Image (cartoon, rainbow, N blue to C red; front, side, top):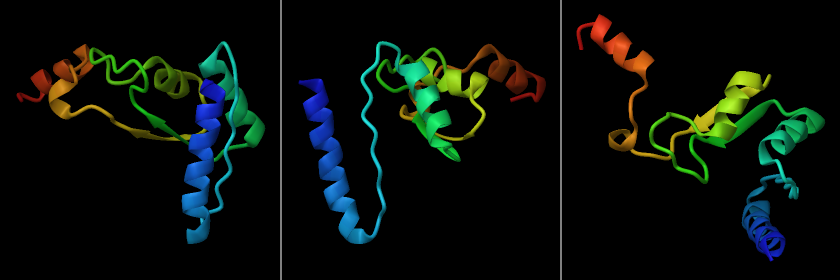
Length: 106
């Protein structure tokens, strides 16, 4: 059921963007390990840029990035465009960020 819903969603996006001249290619992969599958797909497709949402499904606010995004930061080898999906007021600063602010007198 999830596969059909995702496939339908991608078909709708493609039908909206194709008349505007956007060459859109979609990939729908079923896997037990989303992070590993995404890394594999990026490598297989020889991607130049990976666009990610900072928190994705979990929306964990204690850290600036979720596990998938953190994995691409730490282990990926492509350029990243990360879109923050939480307002600034909901993101907790890391200890490193707090230390930088303190050292600069902010």
